[in-house]
Length: 342
Ligand SMILES: NC(=O)c1ccc[n+]([C@@H]2O[C@H](COP(=O)([O-])OP(=O)(O)OC[C@H]3O[C@@H](n4cnc5c(N)ncnc54)[C@H](O)[C@@H]3O)[C@@H](O)[C@H]2O)c1
Image (cartoon, rainbow, N blue to C red; front, top):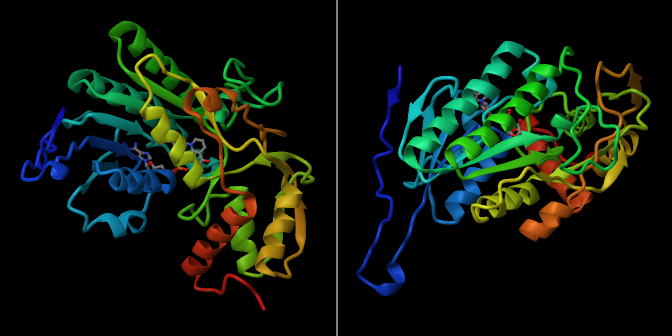
């Protein structure tokens, strides 16, 4: 069933002609997964830029608390909807972020993860084609699998285990990219594909099993810090504000820029060092304990962001300590504990 839903409140171009400085051109922008970690920050920035924003989410991993502060804004609208079902709304731009992103969430219902990636992409691409919208895909560094080249450039084709427990996500995102490029070739659709590397910041899930949130929550609770493997595996962490700035720059590029473009912070640190930084910033007394590495967990992942620098004039600006302190403050408030132990 095609859901007929008119995004009716605003006109495409709203002109308030009383004074010349009141001329406003508002874009109608839809964000799928808008109540999630990245989506809620993106909605905020899109509102700040003067757009009308429609957040579409089925709240599988997203939370209404993430968007509560925007609900009173007349230019913000939300819709509970699963993108595996078609949707018709008149919009100018679509950011397709809907998909559980952490292994614990996407492996919870792997078939639904694949459906969200594929059927969701088909629905969003179909909508974009129908209403003539630009469409942006939040792809992932997971398309590189357990990479054999470092750092990863966009032309590296990846090393993914098609049968493993991460494949529902990795292969789902890979095929979604294929769909985006086929819609581009077949229908000349304006597409924007970015490959996101590890991102952290306020509004991450406290129980999503990702290293940054795990370490912070464990340290704030005074629990042992769990490292999977020996901690020598490296990760590169991008603060959410930097990433969202990259999204907006990508969407603003001309039709010839399709991506895929890597977005992430190329500054690598070993996971063990991250744990030590978190413990020291919180002043916690937590011990570090080691557990076996999960299947298919990549040992190293680091973006080559030369293309983003060249095409978008984009580089991450927020250093790890600044970003960690903001994230710690968020989790401390969520857990109702002080951000810094005495
Ligand atoms: N955070 C990262 O480090 C990272 C890295 C690589 C890629 N990404 C991609 O960025 C996007 C956002 O990730 P995030 O970290 O904000 O994750 P998140 O889980 O916080 O957000 C995903 C959102 O999508 C919603 N959702 C899931 N399935 C849906 C469906 N079928 N229909 C409608 N809504 C649905 C969830 O409820 C949630 O609000 C995802 O597509 C993810 O694959 C994120």
